[in-house]
Length: 447
Image 1 (cartoon, rainbow, N blue to C red):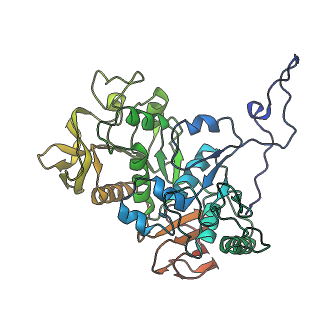
Image 2: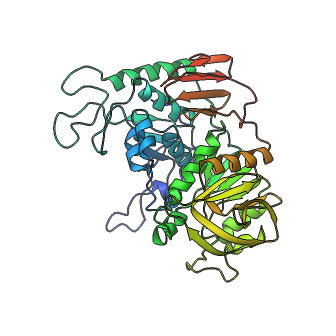
Image 3: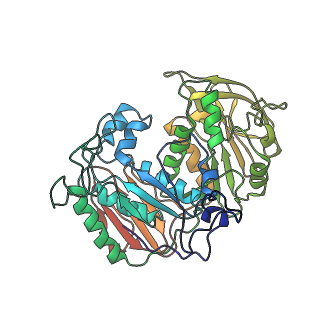
């Protein structure tokens, strides 16, 4: 499925040039006008800095296999079973938003899962309606193209069990192919779509942070990408749109800035955070290492002490089954990771022994633990209230996304949901399982 791409007046010279030909002295020849360069990224791959690669691309693209990635992510068995035939409602959107950021506002889905795949430990058939849902969801998040892999299921070789839009050896659409055809009709009915507006919520996503926690996890289940995903999930459960930004990017127009983890705070990142006017929440281990992977002389959070006066004196990784209660303005439990903090700032919540857990100074907040679901939900809700953002609390299986004057709703779950819209251009007020609705709205929550 393709939406018209915005015109580009020029392509950066570094991205337009090919390799020099042997014996040439006039340098590499530029690509013909109108050509562009992209690269297809993958889900939950953090082995290299996608932001740096994106600097040399005209747009980003990625390969979306929502069900396959359920097996790749460290979900609980209950979660895996729950989302086995639909995927978790934040897996594909997480990457749509991430790669829209990497692509400087532009991204494609280069490979969209059209049915069961062949490479995961288990490969269930998507529930009827999900291929259409994933397609329209990508468009709602700003995708210019949704391209399926593959056109026809191969009757041979190692990918013969990977579904295609057509059945193997037959001139007949598969179930996913029929949903792709319906998606094309849906897009015709929607007409021209406006671009995604900047979201009021930004998440700083840092690949160096992931590498640092791989090098020194300190607790076997401390996974930076999982922490970022859970924070993203919590904010989306409130019906809000999200942009991912790289450390050092301008934050002046963001109302809420989430920093799940930023072990090394660069000078550029610190400057951007200092000039931000919105509410900021830092997660555990932020500012805990310098550029040379040493503990800062002034103790963590290192340079972030310019923003909030606190020192982390020691840390404890909590094995499964251990937790520390948190109470105060927000409540829940600390799991996996818990820090000992000394501070002169305001203490909003404390651990069971009275130590600070959630600290605040002006618009800056620091959470000194890995929060369980209850604590994370309460913390994020508190930050959203302070940021004065209007929310739409959602059930676990429903998500919203805005594109221009359209609000899209997606139902990943087993039960219907009543949409708050009126002027529907797709579906209706009763959002059935595995289906999509879209309505026009002026001022929308989070938009």
